[in-house]
Length: 302
Image 1 (cartoon, helix red, strand yellow):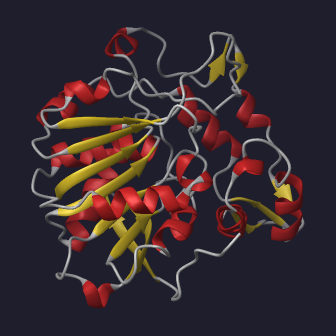
Image 2 (cartoon, rainbow, N blue to C red):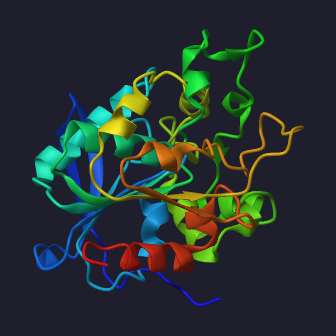
Image 3 (cartoon, rainbow, N blue to C red):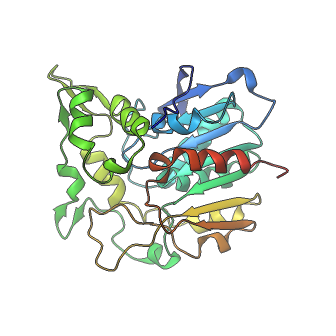
């Protein structure tokens, strides 16, 4: 399988956004102003550099990819309310003075993109939301949305393996296991390469997004009760790409199916939907070529 990785290394920025340090990776700054900037925001448990196989197919476009709080190289600030990730992204928009950009978000990153678009109405010309974690409106009316336990027990992701001897060891562990076995090789490489940080005790590496942090994100996924206020406020074109629906007997650790409410696209003023019934939730990592096609086609004036 051919490599899709960018030809150049990005510039790493460490900026203050919403009162915390957020890491951002920037490519193609010399192209800024010629075409809209592309702002990319990742899913829970991942980081900015999983977008590399997509970015490598975007030519010399100006791209900014964000490490969300508690992920990648960003500050390990807690996520107890999903409103904060939208505010963080609004801070990134302010720092780079973005206007008329293309927002590309996956999963929680798509949720953050929606809130940021509502907070900064001039920031985006269009939004491309890949299997966003935006559930049925009724789900946000339930109680018990802010908890770190499932039936009194920690979320299972809190127990995932956290220490690895090397990037290679992490790749070897994951390459034949779902969902990673379905990733494009470049996406798996980048996920492992930038998903580890040196352990504080000097013994190998640990996950940049700790299992406890990842678990807390899942357990607060219905915390933003105003997300549909943001959805209905957005006055630019929005494309919702939705993956396969979950089976009724879906397990708590099965993240392969879509978390997106099927009616979401209709709630946007200018929404449209693409339903990919043969794709899993991990569309950007499994099919970077397809995502790049959508990004390049979904431009103002087209």
